Length: 318
Image 1 (cartoon, rainbow, N blue to C red):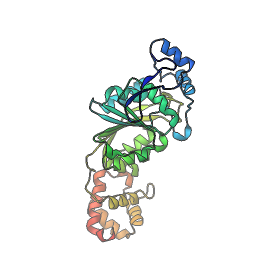
Image 2: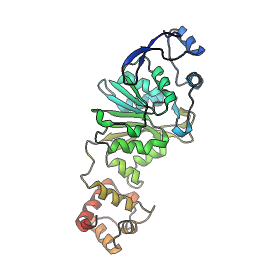
Image 3: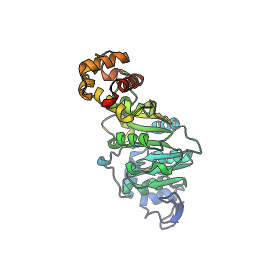
Image 4: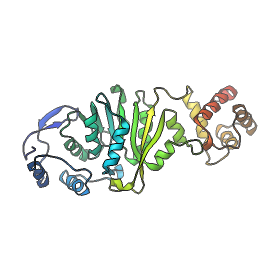
């Protein structure tokens, strides 16, 4: 039982459990303690508001804070991560700790990286029973993955940092085994796109891993509710990129292909790479690709074939 002014076991910033006063308890927290359990119902909006007030915290639009309050969606995220007792989990932006608490129940260690200092005590308190939590107050883009061995990333990602965070982990020397992320539905659909709806984002992610959408999560599953629906996205990360290529040259070709939306490849590649239409037509013909096709229609294999034939024909220009 947590009592005012008493020392309680608290998970420290480096994962160790120490005994020190957590914070001054408010009236409603003391009432919870008197009932015999200190438990935040983080699916209840009234409790969320009371908890935020007690800790002097509030949601911040500039940090993209939308707290998940849907238990079914929470279960689907944890199930998709397929966590075992030896797993180390990195969570980006734990917020109040609703997902963190479930991850702590399943994993060997959870490293929660939170930029908002006012949320640190909230997430630690939500997970007070779990000694396997390590909370780090820092920008996730400065997080050092090389200090870890194998790990997974499981997170309700703040919308504003979705693409940079995915890119950071996929391009790291020490990549995660997989990523299970709650992101904007539109972003998830773009990442997991098939030929016909491909984009630079889709090619960039599918170069490093195999993405799939687990389920759609409606905007009503969050507090405060965002303006758009979300989706649970799972990326099974390859140990090595799908193709052995010169990454700089490969993505120069890809960027050129997508340089003008819905433009035929013969035009976009010619203009983007500075080669003549005749040269481009010969290149596409050698690869077996119709010059009138658009970049959105190409598969990953076709992008690889384009790269290989480009190297054969224009390597001195790359």
